[in-house]
Structures are given as C-alpha cells and as structure tokens.
Figure (cartoon, rainbow over the protein chains, first blue to last red):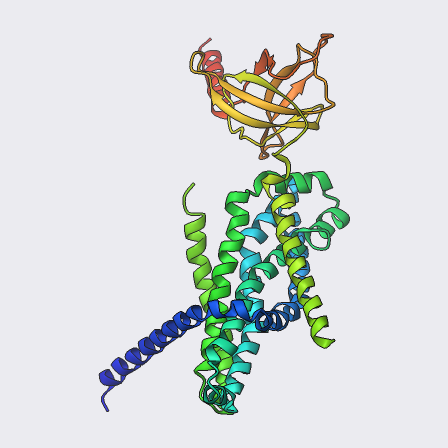
Length: 261
Length: 154
C-alpha cells in the first residue's frame, strides 16, 4: 500500500461518514411529524435529557455568574467603573458564556448518555428487534430524543443565564458581597442588553447548539459498532466532536449575529 | 403513578424554562422599562448631544427620574431635539435647565436636569428652553491650545 492512496481513502471515508450523518439527520427530521401522535415518548426523553441536566446547569450557572462578578469587579474598580458590573456580567453571559457553557455541559451530561443508550440498544440487538416487529427505530427511539434535546437546550440556556446574572450568581457577589448598588446593577443591565440582539441571540445560538449536540449524539450512537468498545468510542467521540463543533459554530454565529453595527 | 410523577417533573422543568425566558426578556433586556412608564414627555434642543443615546437616564440631583426616548434633528435650526419621558410624580419647574453630562470619566452620557424656580411645572409636550450640550473633549483641547498660543504671543 502506498501512502497517497491511503490518504485519499481516509479523506473519502470521512466524507462518506459526513454524508451518512447528513442523510441520517434528514431522515430523523422527516420522522419528527410522526411524534405528534406520541407526545409521551418526547416527555419521557425531556425528563432524561432536560430535568436530569437541570442540577448541573443551575449549579454551574451560579458559579460562573459569581466568578464573572468577582473578576469583573476587580478589573472595573480600578477605573471607578464598578457600576458597570451588571452590564459586563450580563453581556458576557448572554452573548457568549451562557449558550456555550450550557451546550458544553449538555454535551457531556445528556449527549454522552444519548449516544451510550442508543449504542447499547444497537449492541444488544434491540434496534434490529424493533425493525423485525415493523417498528421504525428512527421514529420510536431516535426522533423523540432529538426533539427533546432541541427543546431542552434553549430552556436550559435561559435558566443558566438567569442563574448567572440573578440573585444567586452575579447579583449575590456583586451587590451583596462587594457592595455595588443594586439599582445600578439592574439599570446597567436593562440599558445595555437589547432584546432584539442579545436575547434573540441566546435562542438562536442555543437552538443551533441543540441541533448540533443531539445530532452528533444520536448519529454516533446509531452508527456505533455493536461492541462494548464501539459504544465507548461513540460516547467519547460524541463529547469531543460536539464540543469542537459548538466552539466552532459559536465563532461563526457571533461573527454573523454581532458582525455589523 | 410513576408515569404521573414523570409528567409533573417534566411540566415543572418546562415551566421553569419558560419562567427563565420570561425573566430574560422582561427583566434583563431593554424591554424592561421602555413600554408604559407612567409619566409625561418633555423635549429639549441641544447644539450637540455627544454620545447620548435613546434609553439614557434623565437625572435630577443624581436621582433617576426618567429616560431619553428619542433623539432627532430639527431641520430648521439644525439642533438635536431630545425627547425625554419623565416618570409620574416628578414635577419640574417650567424654567428648569437641561445639560448633557457624563457619568465619571468613562461612563455613559445622561441628561442632568437643574431645577428652576418658577411656580408652574412642565407639562406633557413642553420644551426645556435653557440647555447646554455635551462637552466635546477635542473642542476643549482646541480652546486650551488656542489660549496657550495667545498667551505665548504676548
């Protein structure tokens, strides 16, 4: 075997993998309407994807907000501009940290679980068993998980942002501990956070990240080799790939959403 | 019964999420205090508004009494006409003055109201006649240099 040939094969293989995953995504999207008659499946997945991720999101939101307030205060107080603390915390959280950190945590907490679950179902022949019973595993297993992830991530992101900015996070450290005026904290936030740009951006970003994470997770699980090693690889690559994809997509989204002005 | 518990938990989660969305839109963003402040609108014409933006605070003796709602150009005088919404309950004497000030060295610009002594109060749609525009740092430096130059010549 010669080296250039191997290189071309590797490129062709990864392109084929990408193509397969896109076809898979289209099939999942096409099977979403069938969920209207079985909302129960989505609710169950919302529990495992959303409710079970709630604790980690709330706790990390609170701590991220605290750290931002603390370090922001140290920086701003030198300029006598500690009144701008609320603005700096809120804009950092709403524009970048909220959507990105939530999506990264979501990939680690929910994405890996999705990939492992689907991969294990495949390894134990549950998926082929369903096919034999004329139940489409894409509709029954994959589509509800995809939709649940898509719904859960924007909600989790909003909760993260509120926790980071609000009474338990940035507000606690900034106002209660460091003594920034509460009125200045909130009025700074309300003057500088624009609904049309910053808040809409939260939902655009978290929607895109939701598609990315759940798409990678269900695809990795569904296409994992049906062995214990295959399942573990699928889980790992779900977290790695979706983290990279989130960070890359965030750069592009920020460039598009905050590019002009 | 276990499935009912699940439904309740999921419902709670979604409610929490929607509450967070609501807080983000109504409390955190600029929608929080634009729509529907009870109050009245007064205008003031400035020769230069500097970096004043719509949404900036209007202060009287350091207390926030309203906000700038609109800035536009008067086509005949070429002055900037600033509309301000003053909250209900704050009465301003008719001969009050308005000037554009900066909060701190790096802070945002706001409109400071100096109270006058007249008996009558400003009503909705009135104009504040005595105004002073923003201080432009470059103009100040220019004046300073000019004066220095004159002094050197004498």
